[in-house]
Image (cartoon, rainbow, N blue to C red; front, side, top):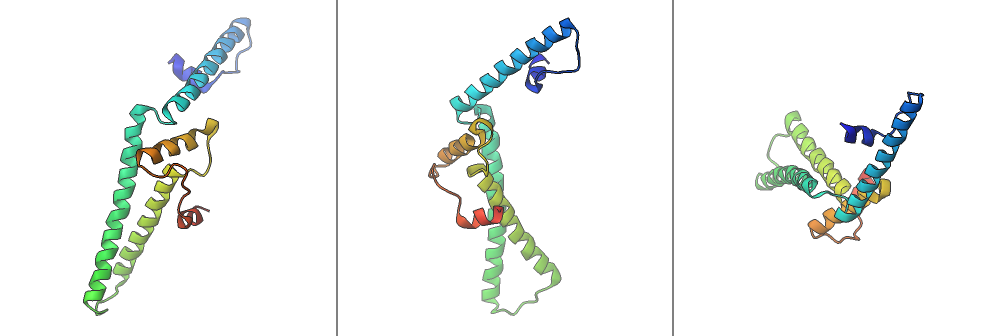
Length: 154
């Protein structure tokens, strides 16, 4: 409970001497916690070890979702080639195709945010996290996002 209070920072609603002393203690603890967090960011490259699994799973989910849509569209293209265009393009089929295209773009953007954040974040947290993730996935650590992704995120 005290750690949660320390993370929220000092409170400023009381005015008595005892309250002011308590506030000073809370502020000191807040500064200590924030300093410790900053050190952890440096030590672990922006991702604490237990949280790395969360990022890996999120990246896996976005990758698989995009790949499922790519597979669907590849099968659709194969079918159009095999039938030489002799199929009925219904409103439902158009909607499904557009849904898969949107799914690909949405998940590509999500992956881009993990590996190439738009902002460095406080104390460079987002940038360090991205560098760590790029290293975990054997991506060029200094690589920039593909041009098409940068344009989609503007």
